[in-house]
Length: 115
Image 1 (cartoon, helix red, strand yellow):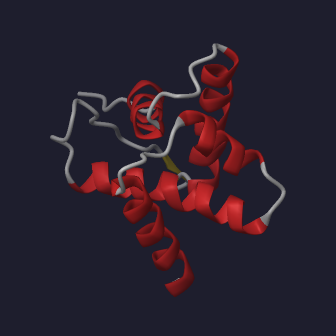
Image 2 (cartoon, rainbow, N blue to C red):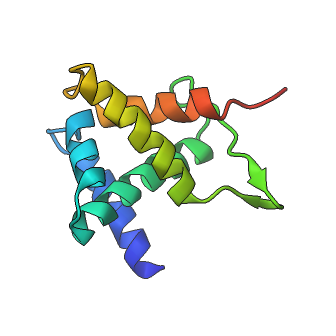
């Protein structure tokens, strides 16, 4: 658990640096066979999910992750959906976009809150 927290912190610090993580950067990390890249990928996505989950007024991105048998879906499942969207944006030659924008849009469009 401590390692996961460290990964999230590193991802958030990296995102706040002058060079933001792009769609292409995140997709490359998520598609890599290297463990460190895979850890960055899931850490970045979890960081976005947790940040938005704690502050739903940020941007427009209210989202509600569904429950599966009483538990919220896993971060691995969220990662799979996000990576699918990242691939689509890379194919459309939109790799320079900020990754946080695509992750946020993916969460909002795939898991909108039901009123």
